[in-house]
Length: 464
Image (cartoon, rainbow, N blue to C red):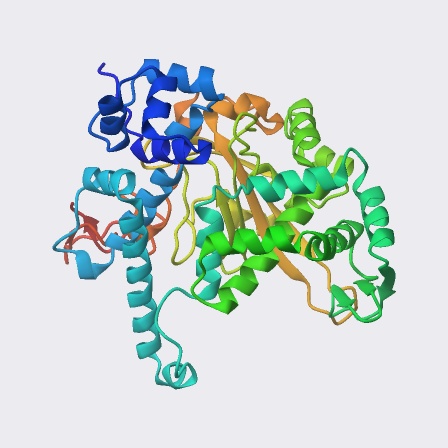
């Protein structure tokens, strides 16, 4: 069987830029000629095994970064956007999408932004009331989507913020670090009986109010969020500058995300959390008790363990509501999530609402043949009062089967049984499967055959 050639020009350029090296200096360190490096960076030549070995030896490079990264996510996003009927007659082949993602990622991002503007403009035009209400708002990415994509293309790992949070804790418990910071900042911590407000900070009186109804994990997280704003504002602003957000609203939303990132990284510092995760084989309950964090916080943190040279198991993490809408999505795996609409109905995350308080396990296979161990669990957020509404979500966490032995939840599952893997997809509109019994809409890239005198599970057949 022929070995697949590895083209990773964008990743080589990114690595060289991060190290601050010229092409000549980088070529010398790798032991190749300048023209050869230039050809690799422009994807005219594949990255050889000798170059990969030099990357590891000279720069402690994690070779997994060459296999999974921004390119795969971008190809998935491009493919979904190009499934739009407007491109039906001109959809490029998959190989072309890979070339664009590898050779011209800036062009790919510009195309995705343009398509998103087109989709949102159509949505506004579909409702006259909505169009009138949004008078003066220019078409383009919604602030929320723009921030989501910012974290998405950062691999959900922000090195400077993560290391700052780890340094802030400095080997202490999160509670001790919080107490010391509040004392240094002369902030008075008080309980609030306002159930509708989780956190409120009065800068004049230097008083931080945290809801007495919130669980300790939430109170701890919210205290760290405020501390991040007070002590690391310059770092957060500098990171926001790199995002080049289109609006102040997007920047403000991203600021919340960065403070949340700091809070999670301080509550579960990278080094000790990674070590404990490996020791417990990623047992979320044990990690939750050890770090005083909720299951959702632990699952989210596991998906961020992508520090160069010290990576954890690559996990995906999502949160969905009862309507199936994805409200959080992060992936360090090849599995990506739909930008529009809900997730695949065959995925076990949707069944989690039926079994509250229990982990559901699923062996799944995506159309590209990659197999995963998927976990799902319903989580409820109490309203803390008799008539207060209860917020219900389901969280899902998973990894590729090659890492399943490192996860306690694979125990007792027969990973060698091909029939045990359920077929799942990203979303129906771009799923290639022709025989799915749960398909909600036809795939946009395929032709349909309609037979009036014959009816199978679906009223049509996907014919190519």
